[in-house]
Image (cartoon, rainbow over all chains, first blue to last red; front, side, top):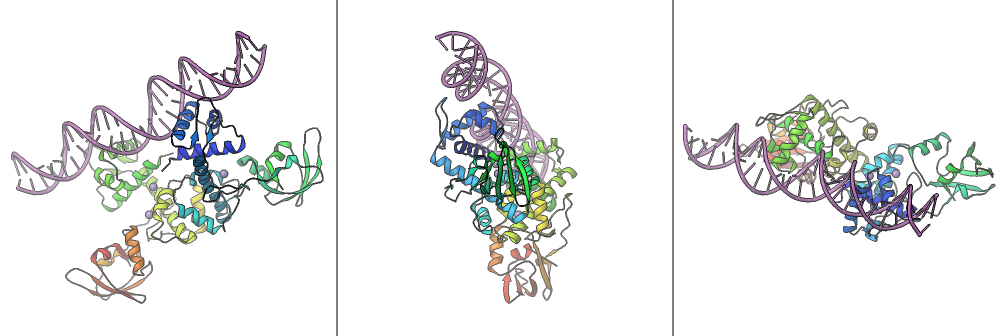
Length: 215
Length: 215
DNA sequence: TAAATTTGTTAGTCTATCCTAACTATTTAA
DNA sequence: TTAAATAGTTAGGATAGACTAACAAATTTA
Ligand SMILES: [Mn+2]
Ligand SMILES: [Mn+2]
Ligand SMILES: [Mn+2]
Ligand SMILES: [Mn+2]
C-alpha cells in the first residue's frame, strides 16, 4: 500500500493542478511544509510509479492514474468530514484535521458504510464535491460572490478556502451554506460588499467575498 | 507524537503482561510478525523512553507510564470497535482490523465524541473492558465456561480470544454476548460440553469452552 | 553435567523520508 | 543584455524501522 506521505503529496499535487494548473516543486514544498529537495525526490518517486510526468525544470503533470488515486483519497477525506459533521456533531471548522488522518485508513467497507449512512452525499460540509468511487469528480460550477453585482440575490453553495480561522469568522457572522444572500451595495473603492441574509446585515471585504462561492 | 510502530509494540507488551506476566522478546516478535532483532532494538528504545524496564536477557517489565500509555491506545481501539458495531452496523468479526488502524488517530475530541454517542460504554463488542481516560482498566472477573459444571446456568459475558474465525464460528452457532447458557452435560473423556441457549442445543469442544467467559 | 536447543544480542545493511549545503538553470529586472 | 533573484537539482547525511548473519547466554534434554 502507498504510504501516508505519498498520499499527502499526491493530494497536494492534485489540488494544485485543480487550482493553479501550473504545478511546481516550490508550491508543493510550501503546502506540505517540507524542503525543496524532499519534494524533488518524492516527485521522482511518484513519476517512477506512473502517477506524475516529470521532466527536469518543467512544471509537473499529474497522470490519469495519479488523478484517480488522488481523487479516491479526497473522497475519503470529504466523506469523513461530512460524517463527522452530520453523524458525530462536529462543527465544520473542527473536521479537517481529523479527516487529514482518517483519509489514510485502508478499509473500503468503512468508507462505504459512511457513504451509505450519509445517504450518498454529493458534497462535503464546505460545499466541495465528493469524488465517486472511480475517482470521478464533479466540476465546481459556482461563481465567487466577488463577481456578483449590487441587487443580486444568490445562495451560498461552497467555499474556495476552508481554514479554521475563516470558518470561525463565518460562524461569528452566522453565515452557513444554503444562506440566501442579497447584495445591497458594492463599494467601488475597495469592493467591500454590504449584504443581507437571514436577519443579518454585514459588510464583507473583497478578501472574504472571493472565498464565498454562490449560485 | 509516538509512531504507530511504537504504539503497536506497546500494546502487544501490555497485553502480554496482562495474560502471560512473563513478557519476552520472542513473544513480541511473534505477535507483531517482525524479527527478533527488530524487537530487541525497539525494546531498548521503549526503555529509553521510560515505558519499559529492560535488562539484557531478563523478562521485560512495563512501567506505570507504559501501562497508562498502552491503556489509552487500547481505549481508542475498543471504543472504535464498539462504535463500529453500535453506530455503523458492522459485525463483531469485522471491526478489529479497522480499529487496529483507527486506534492511532490523534484526536481526543474524536474518541470523546464516540464515547459520548455510545453512552460511555464499559465494554467492547467482545466483552473486553474499555480503559478509562486515565488508563485505568477494570479487572476481568469472569470465569471460563470450561470451568463450569453440568447443570449450571450462566450468562456469556466476554471472549478471551477474538479471532475472525472464532467469531464467525460463534455467529454460525447463533451465540452472542448476553446469551443464557445451560450446561446439560460434560463429557468426561474430552470435556466436550452439551449446552443449550435460546432455541439452540450445541456441543462445544474444550477448545471453544475455554474461550467463552461467563458469569 | 555436557550437549543440544532455544532465546536474546550485536553488527551491519536496506529503504523511506526527511534535512542542509552547494550548485545550476530559469526567470526577472536593471 | 547582463546581473540579480528565484526555482530546481544534486550530493551527502540523519533517523526510524525493518532485515539477515553471526554469535552469546540461558534453558532444556540426554
Ligand atoms: Mn478538509
Ligand atoms: Mn492526510
Ligand atoms: Mn480488537
Ligand atoms: Mn494498530
